[in-house]
Image (cartoon, rainbow, N blue to C red; front, side, top):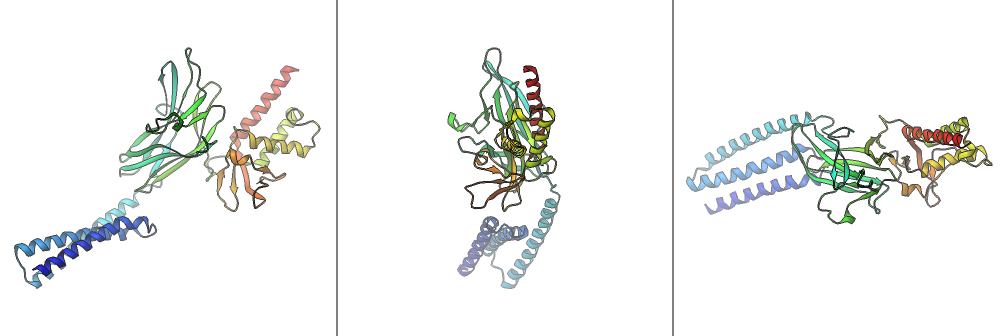
Length: 378
């Protein structure tokens, strides 16, 4: 009997090893089909149960070898049938997952925006909603700020909330930032604050963003276990009425849904608009040649904190935002929507450099306001 007990123990340990391998292997072999790990895991569980049952049967009643073999073969077929059945259900459930299983939603109405008292001041908080569009609960989710521009003390990534739980077809709201708008008893604040976890109790750990400069960043929700994620591109700023805004902008990686214009074409439109309304010599040198005046608007777009600049960093074909820090060492190429750097090994650093038409419209509006101001002073 001792030999049989040793063999059953070895079989149970083999089943345990199979289960452990099925749990650890997917992260090392991400391209392997999921049914392989599903079968290994439950096959290992079934083998352990079978070995324990055989050991109990052996201790209670010592069966003849033919009966034991037939019984084990029958149980193996039953286990295989159950694993196959539940694997088919698992595959079917995965097929029902929608194309956007999780989604970050942004709006300007309550409860996306709230105003509350903060001592003598009035605090406005902006937040997003994370929707779970599947029939399965989401656990261990996290929401991050990525590619913050301008950075906060050279840091561009921040965790806003971790360990997010969302029930099936449910949602949660996550605070993004807040700003003290001011009251009759307290002045408006000078900073916007990102809402980081409460563990960041040191003042230096809380990102404080100056209100004079609009900030852009990606909001990314992701889960480790399910591999779900969604990302949007946002702009955070305080307007002239001391109101905090969080806007969704067109994703730099996908221009669909947002109207972009090449930066050289935008400069041409700004040049013609300034010429049409009679302030071309006012915004640029009166003694400059027309090409130099056109180049002036290219330079303005690159240094204006209220204009977001995008481009393809060669040799990549993906469009990405270009940070203000990076723009400081780049120069436009006359007649092209290209940026170059004297420090780069390749002369052309960014191609198809562009901006949104919304930013261009706002800049043209400022030009017209400048014309009106000049008319009043005459």
